Each structure stands twice: as structure tokens, then as C-alpha cells.
Amino acid sequence: DVKVTQSSRYLVKRTGEKVFLECVQDMDHENMFWYRQDPGLGLRLIYFSYDVKMKEKGDIPEGYSVSREKKERFSLILESASTNQTSMYLCASSLSHLSGLDNEQFFGPGTRLTVL
Amino acid sequence: AQKITQTQPGMFVQEKEAVTLDCTYDTSDQSYGLFWYKQPSSGEMIFLIYQGSYDEQNATEGRYSLNFQKARKSTNLVISASQLGDSAMYFCAMREGSPRSQAGTALIFGKGTTLSVSS
Image (cartoon, rainbow over all chains, first blue to last red; front, side, top):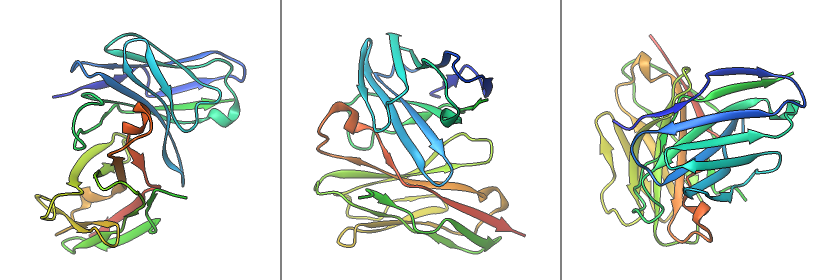
């Protein structure tokens, strides 16, 4: 079974802090994703990585950066956390961007971040 | 314009009844894939069912089936014989076949429908 794990289920940070959200997958997937989920807005893509050190911006990258130094690990970084970044953050992985359209995304359990 | 539209914020159904969750999509691609995910209160996203744009048959997986109407650009999820454990948020998602960037291979999600099943 594919497993995607996230470093924390719940996190409370203060405005201005640098925040790291870690995601690890154990199935040698090439693609990894960070989504943000807010009530009434669904899931929105923040960043996507298709290989080590390769990344692309999603729909809402402002205020975030990412790091992928190893294939299995994809980190989301909030350089200076703000209250409007309070949200649920979901990491996902999938086989490859060259795979078929039915290439399923596997999700981690999510991190609920609160910025005070 | 929204690419995935789920017009029902909430649905209520009794146990053992069938329920249909609506989803319409917007794409100019001829080739695309459609997904449904379930998110219980625990937060984890669970893949339920997939339909490819060229699939001639409606997809089925156990109690889940899709009513795929390509001309109407809709892919409604039908859950037969609802169970209490079906109470969750359900997301419809699409992957387009001709993305403009590699990030375009990510799934595009709707806003979700909350299903509540009562005994």
C-alpha cells in the first residue's frame, strides 16, 4: 500500500514564524503535490514537484515555497506565517506525469495549521 | 470560470437509500480523467472511482457508480444502499489531457458536497 505521511496532524504557530510542513511517500513516486483546503473552496494546488529539485507553481503559490532534495520528501515552507495561512494542508503523490490519465493521487492525512 | 462544479453543498439521506451527488466539469480537451474522492471527518482523502473520457461504460466500484454524460459534461456519483459510514465530504476532480504545464497534470478539485446519512 502506498503511504504518504505528514509530519504533524495539528500545528499552531505565531505570525511571522517560519513554518515547515514535511511530507514523505514510500512508493518511489515522481510526482508530489501540496494542496490547501478551506471550507467552501475545495482543494487548491499550491506547488507541484515532478522530480528531485524540480517544482512548478500551482494556483496559489504566494507566501509559500517548497523544497524537494530527495525523491521521497517534499517540504512546504511558509517563510513568514500569516493568519490567512490558517488552513488544512494536504500532501499527495502520484506515479509520474507521464503516466495515464487514470494515475491516482494518494493523499496524506493532512496538517491543520493555525497561525495566531 | 470553475472547471469543476459541485452545486450541492450538503445532502441528507437515510440509511439504505440511494443518493446521487452531482458534478459538472468544463474542459476543451477531448481526453481527460474524472475522479471522486471521499473525505471523512478524520481528514484523509480516499479515492473512490475513476472515469476516463473515452470509457464507453459507466464506471462502477461496489456500491459506487458514475452516471457519466459526456455531452452534458457531468459525472454524477451514485451511492447505493447508503451506510452511516458514508457520511463524509465528497470531492469530484478532473485531470485534463492536454495540460499547459507539468503542474497541469495535477487534479483540479470541486468545492465538495457534504453527505450526511442518518439511521
